[in-house]
Image (cartoon, rainbow, N blue to C red; front, side):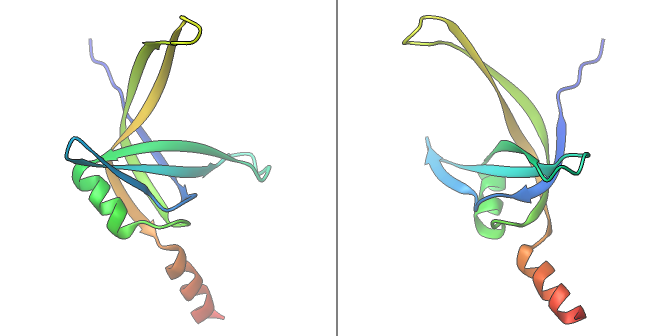
Length: 115
């Protein structure tokens, strides 16, 4: 039996990537806004984690407002809540590939050049 664990998300960065280092590896956290199919003015927000060379790319090239396409896999974490003693879980989105598609500044410059 075959199994699949992957996602693809196209959206706009809500903030500049948050960069940190842990155990000698660079980590980037992206906050990505994705418009819903129903045009109600609300977006769904996703937090995506990048490691190593992808985190370097995010640090060097991605900025708030940029349109990006991220593909990756889901990672499930389980733990016991220290305060309540109850089991907890979370699902992380781990990016395996990132493509910067449209820079916010490029879009503004293009619109200005057309006008």
